[in-house]
Amino acid sequence: MQPAELADKIAREQSPLVVDVRTGFEFRAGHIPGAINAPIWKIMLGLAPLPRDKHVEMVVLCELGPRAMMGKALLGLLGFRNVTLLAGHMAAWRRSGLPMAFER
Image 1: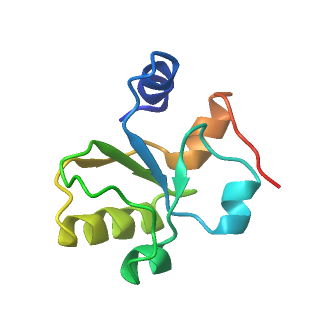
Image 2: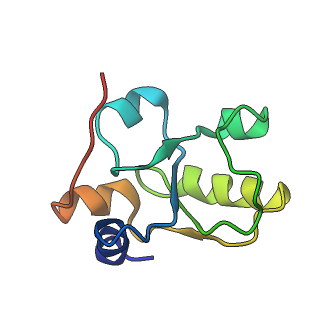
């Protein structure tokens, strides 16, 4: 999914579940509004806040791509079937000047 398409879906309140697999530190420093933080290790240990419904539409991202690809593969192994990657990941979102959320 392209960043502008995701931003539009968020604005229309029709967003898929946005799964940010970056570290908690990276997530708190700036993330896509409404995203959940689910680092790879939390997914592997069953500690990530994932939905029970395996058909939920999800968009997975990291900073540049490699961790997101691992996250997508792990989610597939857990039975999630409607998972895609954010094109360009967080770096592209930031470059596009799209809205960011911050936590302390």
